[in-house]
Image (cartoon, rainbow, N blue to C red; front, side, top):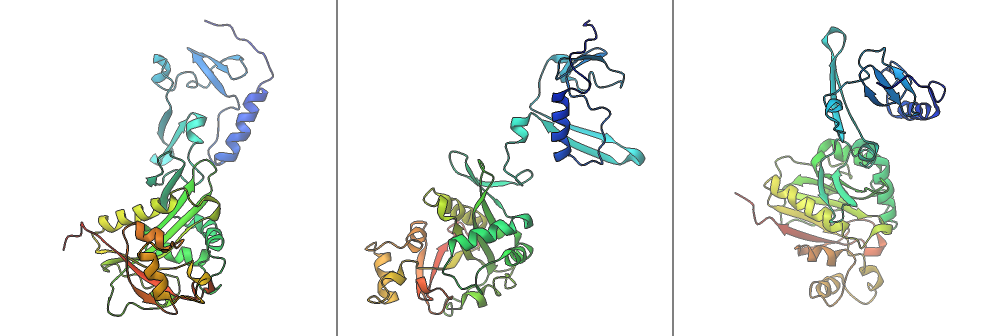
Length: 326
């Protein structure tokens, strides 16, 4: 058995640093018996992170878990205890590199899609994401009318009406929200499809969501300009299609924004422009991507939204769910 040994004051500087870190992450409601950070234990003796050897007078610090008797160092440990009046409380602890790995807000979220290298993930958006969602919206659509731009208030309403359809893309290295898409369910009259964006989406609040609707309507998709060209839109479209299949919907429709049309609108009609994009004679920053994802063009929507870069046009597109079961 080792002798009692003191190398520093109690608690030492490393223990103090860990206590400061704990104070930032753990509620003060959860108390702690002492301020010493224990590194190892043997019998009734404990050794802290400074190398001080002390007697375990708390009756339990030395050997709390069976793994400590076998020499196993677990990556994560789930703890539970019944407090006064039988009230249970539990916690998960683990090595710092594992517990710090999830992006901010990522713990407890189901990852719906991941880029091959693991850097970017798609998750369901949460209320706390609303300010970041608005920031991405403003970066993606600088020419869109302020009355049609989605703000934090709109994103919160969308999540309330149809949470499953609100997606966010996170950069796992920086914790930054860098993209999003917004969808709701509806029924589609394909003979009368040319409705303005704000009418279709209930003023961007998704009050038009119909839980019995047979189609998923894509109201919005945006990838921050700084991270475009890295396959993030592909991740979002794939996740949307997964949702269509899971809900057994007929497919996905949207009003696409032909972002390249404004530059040629003086000498090309919108019908000519879209025809050239379909025939792959011209590439459009938005519509070309959607056609490559399996969408087809159904028609043109005049006065779809107020955006000079598209001359206020929308292109009604459709993706059919081949796995749909009537």
